[in-house]
Amino acid sequence: MKRERGDILKDLSDGVFNMNEELVIRVSSEAVKAGLDALDAINNGLIPGMGRAGVLFDQEEYFVPELLLCSDAMYAGIEILRPHLDKKTVKEKHKVVIGVCEGDTHDIGKNLVKIMFDASGFEVYDLGRNVALGSFVEKAKEVNAHLICMSTLMTTTMDGMATVIEMLKEEGIRDSYKVMIGGGPISQAFADKIGADGYADNASKAVMVGRELLAGVAV
Amino acid sequence: MTTQTSIPADNQTSLGRVLSYLKGEKPQRIAAFPLILNHAARVLGVPVGQYNRNGKLMGQAHVAAWKKYGHDLILIFSTTSTLAEAMGTKMKFFDEDAPQIDEPLIKQHSDISKVKVPDFKKDGRLAVYLEATEICVAEVGSEVCVSTVFGGPFTTAAALYPVELLTRDLIKNPKWVHELLEICTQAGIKFIDEIFARKALPIIVEPIGSGSLVSPRHFHEFVAPYLKRLADHVHKTGGGMPAALHICGKTTPNFKVMLEADFDIWSLDAVDMAEAKKAAGHRVVLIGNVTPANMLKNTAEEVDAEAKAICGKMGDLGGFILGSGCEVPINTPPANVEALINAARKYGRCDG
Image (tube, rainbow over all chains, first blue to last red):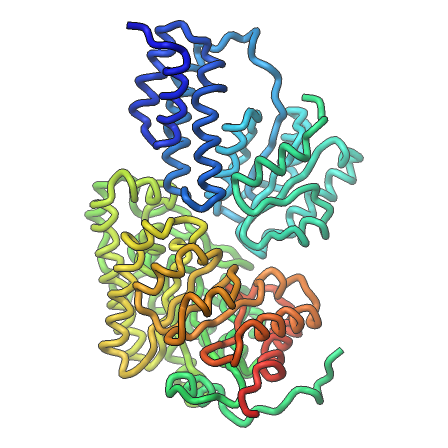
């Protein structure tokens, strides 16, 4: 018996929120069979579930293990639904280039921010860790990014963020991008000092700050 | 502006000052523990990449740093992954930075069979640490407390097995994680024995147990019980030495469960020290918490002001040691290290 759209979406959202990857896989397949629009299932099922997880993360009810397992469930659902996306209904998104500064291989914080941007309707280009500073600029130009996000856990590599901003200025393209930074030693004061547009101290807030920075910026 | 003349002179040695805390007596002034780790290489003028692979240089660097600054605790350290490195995790070395994990030992769960308590004479850089410890104790141990720092069981586990997989397994494969933590705990206990044999103080760092990564529930299940075994071992075999724990980052959500681990000293980073004091009670000595990035970026006057504000939160200053929240960044200007120590001399008076 076919279930209602609302029931399917609720299962997708709850499955992500409750770290129940098995449920998400089963119900994503059900959604496909039931002829539910794949974009509807992602945007109104999986992503709200991840949003709920993000709220609990911000409230220190969920921590890294929970957020990672929620994201595993979300990505498992997206994997099943993606081939069924109707290209015509897929809207353009804000594009984010993200990475960990050169000299630093700690990337769990960056990965969490990537997950939350993925789950919030952004198109994310992940450069990984230990990223050559020029690559942030190159990638942003290549994909016409709206936002550049840089992270580092180390005091020895934080000055690389200022270098990237200087590179943008030298090329006369500083105003083409918003720049956001974060990571252990980073503070709002440091962001102000180097002329970054935004700073966030956790993955959930990163998305809020990103949204604020891009409010009114055309995709 | 402060001038040199306005700083009261010390009448206790560093060691005497630290012993005052252990005896429950008031020191002349509070102790100052800027966490000088890899920065010691800068004082000796050798590349960090040489310092951390040569026990003589590491020991000499810390002796030189202590002679320059006169801080109240020497800390022998290179990375939080040193135990894991000795157990088989590969590190990537840099000329002018601390090593970072290159390839964790465990790729799949069955690799746990490769995890063994290391040989402290030949595995990894354990011999480097222990030689550096011996040099510091021999040269300046009568004047200042020498400590050797290593990663706790949870942090060691996260260096043997990628942290993103380990954190998932807290929920998906808890039994396997406990097995891994058991071996890491045994390695830690052995390290404590080696450190005590050299008349130094073991300090355990558990950054992966930070509240940024794990919940109080997981700390209670996976972090506190194993830390407690290390603390118990210190209490049992240390001849009155305190059990000392450092956790970087945000620890506020975990204060309550940290008490379960039964440490005597907490070194804290990005927390409100007044809140920490309230949570820790009178039994725990607190070390903290000038912002590490500010040590690197701010002026000496700003470091002084931040240290003064922290001292102002600590009531009668009992059981408080002024420190940096985490490692003093390698390239910190010496004037900022001096500013932190002078702040303890100025704002940490206990003598009237």
